Length: 139
Image (cartoon, rainbow, N blue to C red; front, side, top):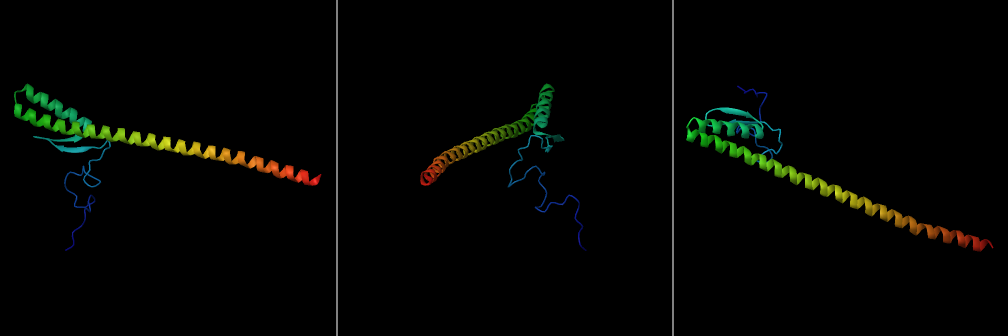
C-alpha cells in the first residue's frame, strides 16, 4: 500500500528542527523563528526573544539556588547570543557590499559621462572642419 505524503513533507528528509537551510548554514534573518528545546521545556521565538527568555530563566534558577539548571539556561542564552552576533556581522557585511556596489555604479556612470563628453567634444571640431572645408571649396 502506498503511503500518503503529509502536507509538510520535506524532500530532503525533513527532521532536525527545520532551522537550517542553505547547506547547513543558519538563516541570518533576524525575524526567523526558532523552535528551541531547552533543558526542561520547549521555547519558540526569534533569536533575540530566546536569548532574553533563557537569560531570564537562568536568573530565576540562580535565585532559587538551582545552579545546574541556571548554567544550562545560560548556555542556551549564549547560543542565541552567538546567533545574534552572526546575524549582526552578516548584516554589516551585506551593507558594506551594497555600498561598494553603489560606489562602483557611480564610478562607471561618471566614466561613461566623461567618455560621452570627450567623444562629443572630439566630434565638434571634425564637424566644424568639414563645414570650413565646404565653405573654402565654395569660394
